[in-house]
Image (cartoon, rainbow, N blue to C red; front, side, top):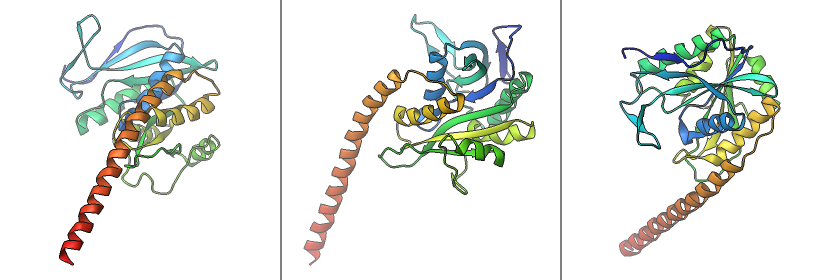
Length: 256
């Protein structure tokens, strides 16, 4: 395999101007959790697979002990009667060249199905062990920004300050060149671990946009498990901070 390859699993697809939702692995796995949850809840059907030499050189082991190449997948489902394409998968590119090549491939698919709008989903790293339900957004058109604000998404000048790395950002920029509206929606997350709680906040926004309701039980259970882990991490952080203060006080006392 010398370049990224798109494998079609179904032909003669009747898909009319679908919105594309992109949830690839990223910070806190926030976007991936949301997109894959919707794929399951809406019983979306896998229609394409993407393989690339820009993915890590590994295979994944199946339940029956067979293996499969890492890949990204495109699913087709319906939300409130409207067609939706879901781009999910195992990895983003490990190379800069690969990011550009794969984004071009994804947008070729979007153009083929006359996608009018793309939402890329991700996490915004705060570096703090606290929960913030804010969903931050950027878009490739100011009119789109005004529309999405109505769903509770926050838009802040020059933020994220460091930009957006990977497919979530590149697809928004490149979509404009192809006449497709696009926005990146990001859930606030510490960024250290998988964050299903942030995914819940982002999922609620997506449900408002698509005007649907989905069962969030599985995400809630994952959130409870991660909350317990985060609590332990926070306690450890506070303990280390206390020890540092105590050590400093002892040093000052010795000097005095």
